[in-house]
Length: 177
Image (cartoon, rainbow, N blue to C red):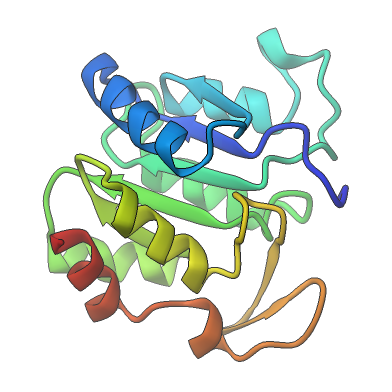
């Protein structure tokens, strides 16, 4: 993986209203962030794996972070997350799930699949920055994490899982603000 991804955030969201609101928040966090928006799960995988309309990309040029809606057409967010975590080229990309509602069963399931964090929509600046800080991402995705069982470590140095991942309760508290 490259030290500096060409895309800081891959934003996977099918609702144009949510895209607009979230982009405003992301631009407030970092006006220079390089963000690619895709509108369904299949397009997200095409982008990540350099296929279809994204065949000109290099697969190794991974985004620094993925913001992923769960309710997507073609392939849902859970399916996208499974593909991302199953491939050695993408498994280390931090994935933050965006959801419209808090369902404890769904949250537990996405954590089992290796999600890095989650936030409730609409995305708010403070919540996003706190989750990014928990992931060790100072300026959107410039540090990848490696998942090893239920633990993680930074590619650029050792950290405990508790330093990287906010527990479910903490992420829920962040998104409630």
